Image (cartoon, helix red, strand yellow):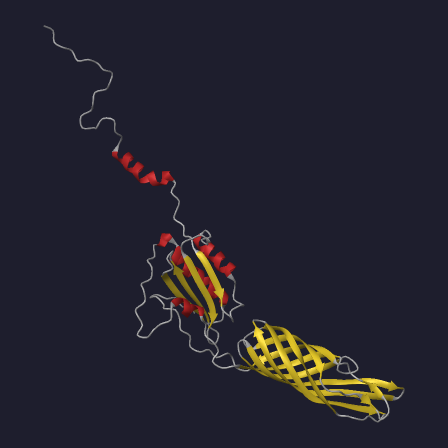
Length: 356
């Protein structure tokens, strides 16, 4: 009986010690490491709603555009999304002296505060403050940094204002400001010709109200009666001016009392001096240049309450109309800077940043 011969199936004989149908071990490990890169997964991105406010007194600080631009530059993309669940609330406000403050909170979808920072710039540099705000927000928002939320602040021994109320209420002046101003004006309708007026102004000023006293002089106006005869008239008065102010716009009422004095050349005038009594409204705009100096451009409607004339015993040479006006420009110097009452600040987490 012949022995059975092995059949040739066309497959190579298996090598002892090597698994059949598998590549080298290093190739398998490399494929496992490179699998996420082949999938093309994008790095995580943050999205946040941004609320940026400037309190009264901080209007000259940069607007939201600079903060958003700097956040985008640091993150590599613009994180601001009106539909985002996370919300960033920021407020820039002035402190005492040359301090500028920024308070920032992050709110989750339920409205709870998950992160807070309070920044201070001591050199009145709002741009530096906004740059530091962008850096702090970048650290808080960037998912790649994996920064844990700041721990909740420890309870205070006294009742504290809610965080939103504390941030939204910048310090208020403890006393009124005292300002002194010098004004020049073009005056028409009070004297025979349009004349120049000057005034020295002193006022007590609150954030939205002021009470001023003004010494006003209208320079002499000369009128020719006939050949060789002239009359000259000028006015000196004191004005009381209460004003209401809304940001840079203001509206006032004034009462003016004084004397009108006339003198003649080769003519005898009567009824001089005469009583000057007027009232009327004032409105204008104030342009601050610093905490110490501001400029006001304003206009008055002058309503005359008393009569006066330029006359001799037999003839009236000139009588003023019932109303007139003036357009003035005044430079105010604030003698003392606004003194701030201590403000309750939002609770600060450990690690609060305060750039100098």
